[in-house]
Amino acid sequence: MAAETLRADARSNRDQIVAAALILFRDKGIDVSMKEVADHAGVGVGTLYRRFPDRDALISAAAHAYLTDLADRCAAAAREERDAWSALGRFLRECALADVGAFASSVEPALHTRIQADPVSTQVRATVTDSIARLVTRAHDDGTLRSDVDAADIARLMTVQIYTRPTEDRTVAVGRVVDLLLDGIRSAAHP
Image 1 (cartoon, rainbow, N blue to C red):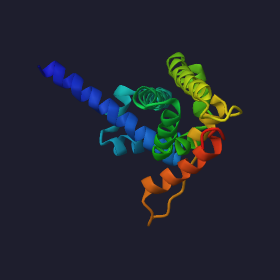
Image 2: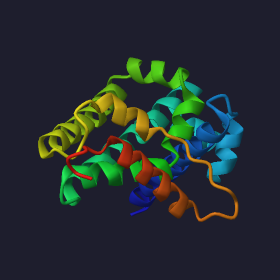
Image 3: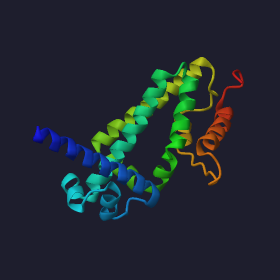
Image 4: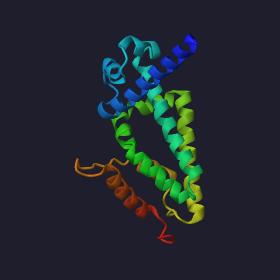
């Protein structure tokens, strides 16, 4: 029982550290101190270093978590929405609400290089890319997506950053901007 609890605690600590790293990398870049990551995660620096022996290990874990989240979001949208167009819209809304663009711009190009060098992250990245490509193909086949819009365009739109004023409801503002984006890539045959 104690070993199972320890494993659960260790897993929880690891998850907290990765979640903190994702937030801090997004907000401050990958050069944030390991102590700040530990503090944000609510763990000691020793606990952080037991889970991640160096910055590269933490960056790799954060990259993997970031890409896995994108893959999960895309797969869920494709599986749960009634058609490819609805799935694309949901996926782009979720990316905007999750500040995918802020994370991507904060960690590029250093993280991109690390992702390409890490076989596990490369595999997850390929899953994201393939999932988006399948959605684009389905939307083209349905005639809902403009024929000149490709998977690379959708990948760029995933990283759109949307500023909202402190007095605005973020969900409403992001929804409005994403609706405008979707109107721009919708096929004229499906207004």
